[in-house]
Image (cartoon, rainbow, N blue to C red; front, side, top):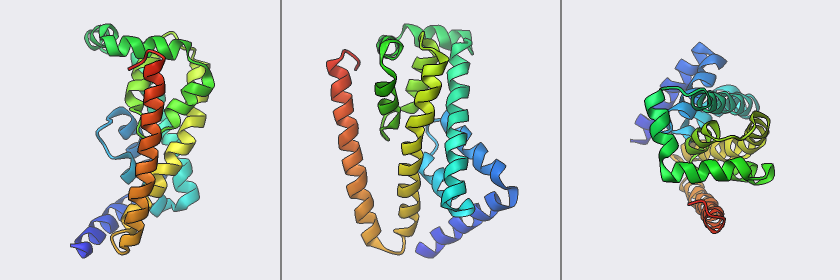
Length: 194
């Protein structure tokens, strides 16, 4: 089974390597638009194929582009029916109100926490009255830690196929990060955003 996984990973990395950095950008941009895709796996693949530095840069720029596409799709009213439905949803409305008023440092922190639903933040930001500059700066800074975190987790997870100690470290790191995200969620709930 380990050998099969290694073969699958090798095949995927060969395809990405043959297409080049554009493939790395595209898979990350797609994940930002289609949130069910595995960001950690895509970032790890970029790190394996292009090295930790260029893999990080490709993933960071790709996720920023993807977030901006989502933001503008909703800012410009992409799909009027969906726009009207999402904008009237109570939870989305609360997030929109919060994002419109939140200081840039808090928005950046919210974006930087790995288990925060980035797609929901992109939608709410696009629908809210937040300035593009505030959103853009928050995404630029907040996505640095996300890309680093998921790059480390993803790459380590692939390495853990051979060394179970790495898997234990990943579980601990994910647990700590998830706990931090729960803390941030509780804080936001105290501020009226659920």
